[in-house]
Image (cartoon, rainbow, N blue to C red; front, side, top):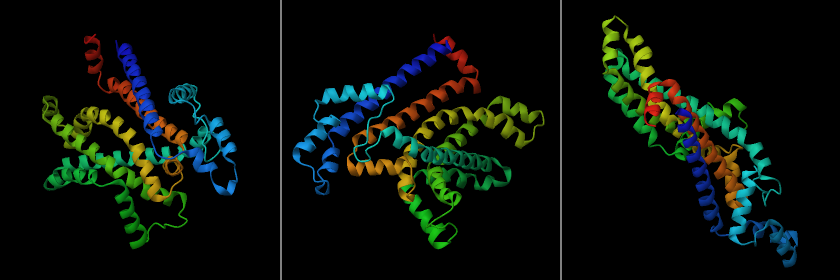
Amino acid sequence: MMQRSLLRRVGQSVLVLWAAFTLSFLLLQVLPGDAVLIKFQNPDLGLSPDQIAEMRLAYGADNPLWQQYLHTLMAMLRGDFGYSVQAGVAVSDLLISNLPATLQLALLGFALATLIAFALAALSRLPALRVLRSLLQSVPALFISLPTFWLGIALIQLFSFQLRWIPVINPSPLQGLILPVITVAIPISAPLAQILLRSIDQVATQPFVAVARAKGASESRVLWHHVMRNALLPVLNVAGLLLGELIAGALITETVFGLSGIGQLTQQAVNNQDVAVLQAVVMISALAFVLINLLVDALMPLFDPRLQVIAGGSR
């Protein structure tokens, strides 16, 4: 039964990827400008109109739209993202050289966001900090309202220009990651903390928690062994969505901090109307989103065996 449910989710994921490809392809086609003309009409190159026409023919820029769609779709199914008009190399080579930096930023940001969310949730449950409970619960709402680009600029202003703790020019690899990771983590930690706090409050009222206290369990054991353990399921469900969203936030952060990654590659592709690169970035982001959510769907029954029973009974 679980295998049938997972296969259904895989089928839905394939439809999502196809929809993302089709929509992005159509939107990119209606953008003003032409990547081939932007590059080859440069007077410095000295190309004649006939030579430019040959270049357009080589790139398939003059083919009917439906032929371009089918050609691009079939190529992507084979793992071929085409060639970058501006860079003159395969798009896959550009992705291979830029994707690791983006993944590093996204994963470190997600790890920090998780730590912040759990810290806020744990502090709000401590008896000594009950007075600060309402304040701590309002912090996530503040975090989620901060635009990523504004937060990054504010952190640079504070820690680099005012406090001079982290240099802007020629930082070490570790120093160069501190502010970007914080910038990515803070907005993502907000919804995680809010859902975790709400889930903890709901689980704390369950009868098994009262039984644990009646047996003499300490508040810390009740929190971490009984309450927190059972409050993780909603967080895990939302974490998959947020991790996919985090990749998009990493692209903006890379632009703010001038980091080499998919964000900088995307910015250059937008400036040059490099459709092949933009299409590949969209599909890589969509694929990451789909794979993350498939992984969450596969892991959730392991955290809560009741889901296996529900899935089995629904068939």
